[in-house]
Length: 156
Length: 156
DNA sequence: TAAAACTACGTAGTTAACTACATAAATACA
DNA sequence: TGTATTTATGTAGTTAACTACGTAGTTTTA
Image 1: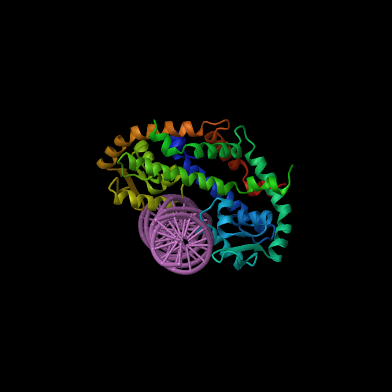
Image 2: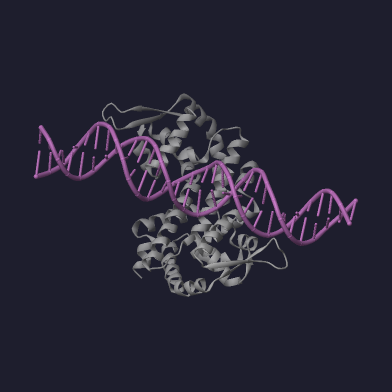
């Protein structure tokens, strides 16, 4: 890591967060591939949510995973193309599209579960430092909810 | 303890890092705008580096800010378009392009310095939680350098 | 009960990073 | 000294999120 960024420290934080996120996602891709599983890390939140909750609409999924709905729609498109999920119109509300896992999706999840467990172990070893990154993110997310960066600067 | 439910948080970590990075960058944009300064947060590492080191080549900047050279080139293009930096050929090595701040660039930096200080304060208040995010990132970056996520999973 | 407002979903285009590939200049080496 | 390798820069295309805007149902309200 470079001298200057270290020196300028906190102001380059978003840059560093982004780079870390990127590296983790790419390693995630490699791990799935190494296990012969065709799955993208970015699909995880959707697939995981659908397994937990069963049938959900586009907006329900978007809210659940914390993405905007256009981002969610593009993920759903990919997953439908892979035949891991399917959709049908809601009879009660014709605007809604209800998504659920296919057989293939359910099977893939079973196949991925042991890999997820190993990933979790690897991540735990990686992140278990003096200042716990997961906890820190959670805390900062809560701080942001109360009062964002912009409001804090303005209120100085 | 280590079932799939617990895995959900940590496996979606890259997603959460990315979102946090995004929010901070956007608030950074708003803060510059609120102070009437035409400056993008993503320009910060380049500008800061040039101020510290004076004249540098494209690759020297890329290494210093920790980006790939194509990413760096596109940042440099924007900054040249804004006339905040200029470039000239290196007489010793005709492949190289030497970048430096313009007068306008130097002036803008002076104008931004107090804003940077306020941002630093606001970020400090935001990030100073029980588990310090800056410290956690730094620690995880070091862990990754020693042994990445991929190697850790493979070595289990 | 018709108009207004809201909600759900979709599309188009943007952004800020990346990888892969290409070219030209400098350096190493047989 | 000429060829091979390395280095510096540049271009094209990709990715994974976003915002802005549009349309079609649903609900509220005057």
